[in-house]
Length: 48
Image (cartoon, rainbow, N blue to C red; front, side, top):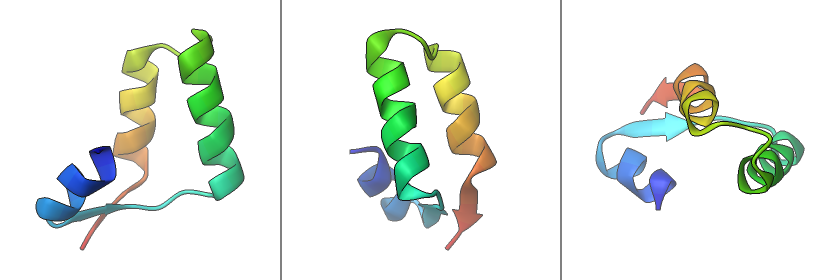
């Protein structure tokens, strides 16, 4: 859903697929806080 929202707003996000998987696992396990997850998104934004 997040990628769709970003694409509709002319924003792309670039990331390594392995890092994305590790990030999602950390998020769902509670190791990564939502604020930190949001910061990761902001760090990887590329204007389309």
